[in-house]
Image 1: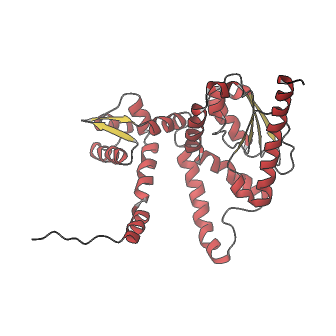
Image 2 (image 1 turned 30 degrees about the vertical axis):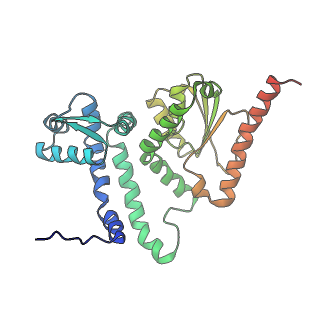
Image 3 (image 1 turned 180 degrees about the horizontal axis):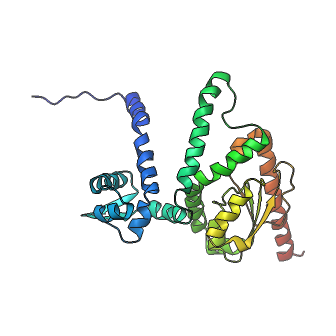
Length: 278
């Protein structure tokens, strides 16, 4: 019997990938909740050992681990599983916060967004709260959700810098720091660096919590301010703009970039004057 030459149309591929792609997220969420990556890192490298560590079903754990292999978070050699580089970086981020912290944060955000989404579609209004106090409370939760991926990205960024570039970074400004996911890797890699955080009073306690857990809080200064009203200052070697520009719109996004640029350029001008007094 001849083989069929029919192919699934490309647009349908896209639709199917979107419709069924959520299983990847669910698998990763299950791995985080069951602390799978930490268990493997600490030696529970088989499905049976992982099931014991997570107090989970053996067969279900094997299926979860194989799923994580298929989406490139684990590798498998016989019965043994190991972390891929991206899983190792994320594991470090997840391991430093209380168990369930991100799951609880995601649940809060999901509940709020689900309730607002239908209303937003009907009215055209933003799904994120627009009044200052509600926005601040929302961001205090959101920054915990986005910590692992932002931490992983910042870790890769600082690792890519040449030693000469790292040596020039002494003062760092972290604008809208949130949980300090983007500046903590710089604090870890550059022991001489000090970091100034500017963020909302409702969010700064989260920043303090996370910098303390990563044992770098003693080199942080915390400025609890309205970001639109504060002067960023000057003399910084690096300015980090966190999860903010796309949410502030064109006018305020441009202003934040200009303030950040001025804070760095003034330090560079001073350095040039020292190097070339003529």
